[in-house]
Length: 266
Image (cartoon, rainbow, N blue to C red; front, side):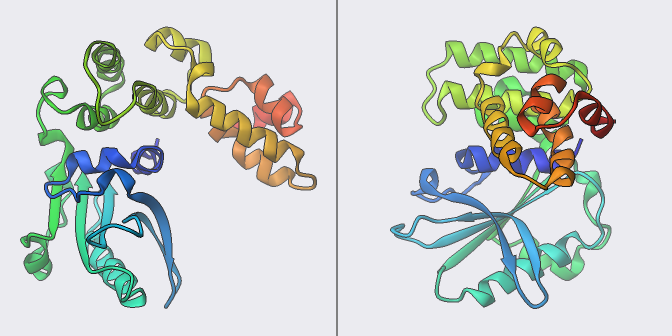
């Protein structure tokens, strides 16, 4: 399971969750758009960028990096890509803020001296998920993100508690349906080896009623209509299975045989 991919999928679905972490959220936080942007010279892609709405008072851009494995060049890459993006778009933004989310402090590069002025500045925030405290004591959005680092046993218990909180608390930042979707997204990624029925029984929810399942189904219908792209369809099989669909459903939506789906899943 690539947990950084889970975070980006969650940020794409609910950008407001990111600003639950940020110490200096902008006034227009709810209207920011999460994107993966391309920068040329040479061409590379920045996975986590939050773009302000066109009518925002301050055109501050937020760069996000999620890291779950050691990378000694983490800050070299993060700062060089961020600065190059702003260099290529000088008239679009008037300020920037960087957020680096790490599973734990142990993933910090050994030598951070070269970037100390940026890392210690008011424009950069480092967050260690395992130091945020008990999920029960956090804002709901932060508790959702902490699910990604929980063990499988803890994840089930914490997911159920979060669902109970959703039902009991007065939710203002996120709709209850969005929160259930986020929990479900994390669950189907983390328990990709389980069937849809097993995930449903474990969490006490119906995957067919969640947006992550409906989006996968719609995406499957669209891919299933395309001719001559069998290789692409086979690549999508694990993704759809991980989002709660059965082999039979995937086969039907993508116009594949059950045997093709089974082999692609393996």
